[in-house]
Amino acid sequence: MITTAPWIVCSETLAKDEYKWVFRAPNIGDGEPVHKLIASCTPLDENSPYCNFLQSTHFKQTCIIAECNDEIAGFISSYLKPENSNELFVWQVAVAPKYRGKGLAFHMLKELLMRDNLEQVKAVETTITKDNQGSWSLFKKLDKANDSQGSVTTFLDEHKHFKGKHDTEYLYRIPLTKTH
Image (cartoon, rainbow, N blue to C red; front, side, top):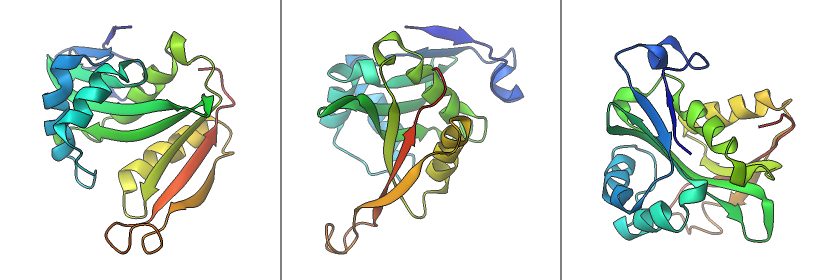
């Protein structure tokens, strides 16, 4: 599904006439640009370009790209959990530095959840490190829009699982109470 804007739902910055927004599923040609985008988005873990090519092909139905004036401005990678296809796990949310603070990440997430192939999704899960304030803000906003019934637990512990080589990843689970 391709949706073009200007959007009224997002902040005024997204609605300005000089911006031409497109929200779409990725394709094989997006693997390298997505890899570069993620590399520019500290504190995200940079995966191999191969991983981003797989996301852009094998998982394209659960990933989304935001383009502004033909430039990739944002990317969300996610997948339906194999043991429960009613749960969408959001792996990474990347917004290019020059497009941050405009509501783009939340808009991409809402666009993704409105896809017909995700209408069965009843909960969104993600993992976030303690210091990733952008992700906390995004998912707290999604939680608030769904009656603030989310929960946070430790998923992968810095010492027990990562042996001190990565910060603790907290699992944020948000039941979707609103029709998406």
